[in-house]
Image 1 (spheres, helix red, strand yellow):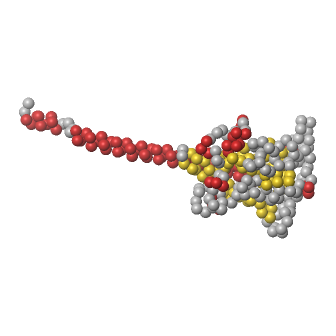
Image 2 (image 1 turned 120 degrees about the vertical axis):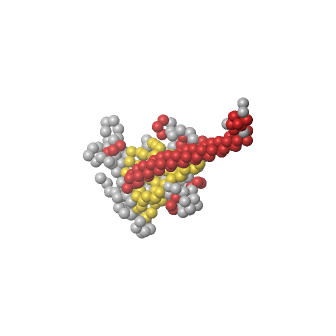
Image 3 (image 1 turned 30 degrees about the vertical axis):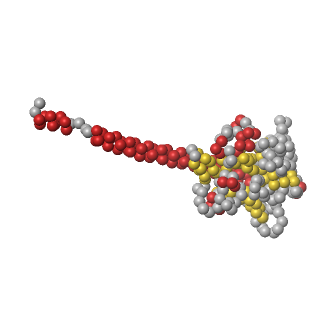
Length: 279
């Protein structure tokens, strides 16, 4: 073999240093690509979780506001509500729910019949659509709700989100039209046979909210007369809702958590238009 051929053969391969450099570059490229994929996956997961929270919270808030707008009676701040003693109706701490409380907010109304063309009482029992209904909306710790429910109302355990709230609707049916003038008072117990159901999972509790964030429910006397009157336009019920869920080690909150407390919740005001009216 000639010297020229030998030199050509020797130059056809790679030196050990060149191989090591190429291997190091490959590792760096793989690390960069891996970080990009992980970051992209996290962003997609955050976006999906945020969109789901936003959609579900909007549906729940619109539903609650729609029910409040139909009310013929709104229970005044300070009213103690005895809704029951089981895990789905008992106020944390054991005492009665109190309208206007900031710690454990609750709003309660009487809704008129949805159908006035048929009787409330039927041979098989009261017709929910044709009867007056007592409605109450309140939050409960998620863990407490999961432990006390089953079936469709049980969203399932979620250890990293056990400190979140769920939003609950309590509904009871009046066998006859309630005399609205007698509903006021220091305490109130709704008709027997009421039941609670889950409206929204992963509600943000005050412990995770910004300082001075408004409570879930606030009630206002719009006429500023100093008395709690029940006439159309007298009362405004504000629903201040934010949803929060920990997903893959990251907190996802809707609306987006900023620095302004008032902007960290979605606020809708319901002004009941049927106050004091009997169909």
